[in-house]
Length: 125
Image (cartoon, rainbow, N blue to C red):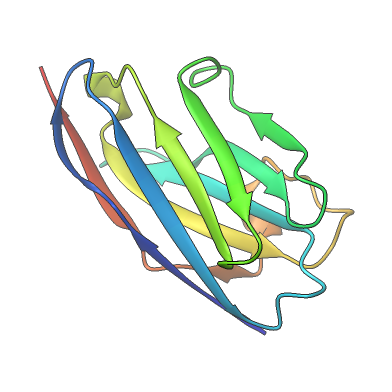
């Protein structure tokens, strides 16, 4: 199994930046995907970005493409989400998730078996 812990959330003004971290521990050697999802109040959880643990291939939601960057540091067992040009609509609880399977639909939250507790990101207008 794997354990995930997010950090780096906070309050930022429109146009600002934040970097979220997802610390990964446990059985990491066979992980395939680590993803970031977000959920705003009253809304469904939505896909933000994902990365393959070993190869570093990246995937993004259209709403964040060009503004957010997902990256991984296997030596530190950490996946990062650099968020630039933040907008009020980016306000949400951001959670990282992990899967050992390469066959999941990586944009679907229900496909991931392991989740962190989430970190709040608030973008003020």
